[in-house]
Length: 113
Image (cartoon, rainbow, N blue to C red):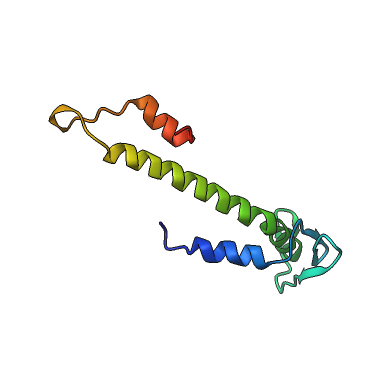
């Protein structure tokens, strides 16, 4: 795919404290009130109108649920692309003309196959 080890990423996400996580000041908290991260930054600047450390904490907190959701989406899209590849690798019509309809390709991309 892209050189990413998606299985390793999924395993790291699975092994992390379950979510949802919440950012509160420099601390990131798990669902049972346990601290899962403390964020500090030597950058006194701001990111999107908030202190850099706060933006980092919000990103980390959301990553707990965002990463598994993105992995699921990647898996779904890869499956749909494979369905299209299978259609394209299937039997061809006369003179090696493709006989796959646009509707069949759309259905495969939409996950209807």
